[in-house]
Amino acid sequence: MIDQLLTVAVDLFAPTFTEDAHGNQAASFSDATATTGWIAPTSTSELLEERDGETVDAVLFLRADEAITGDYEVEASSRRFRVVGSPLHIRTPNGPHHIEARLREVAG
Image 1 (cartoon, rainbow, N blue to C red):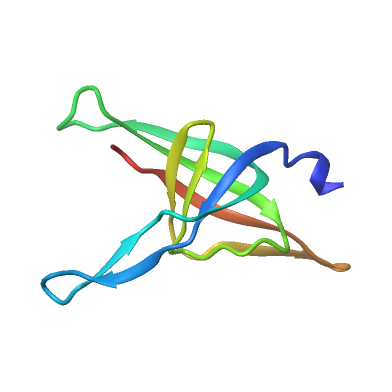
Image 2: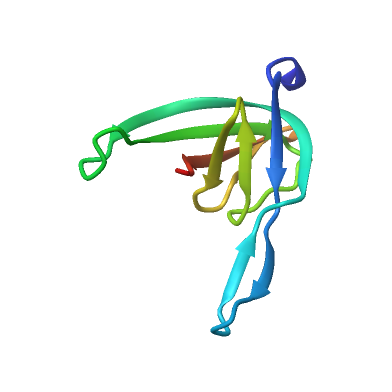
């Protein structure tokens, strides 16, 4: 049943960590895993210091068997998002149902 609702093409980007010139861990997001999901915008805010900029927050819905953590980035409908916090694994009495991940659009 949930598969019928998850109809948007989504790319999940797991981070790859490397050490930069200063010895700090730096994440890069280049290898994507293609899947389907649903993104529901939750809010849009205009950035005061950038008159043309805005921040979009959303929730991503995925099947329960998808691999995603709070370190991931997500791309859907030509927009790039970063996962905010740990994704929620929603259960029913019958077992795992779906995953919900809070997102914030990545500017630039």
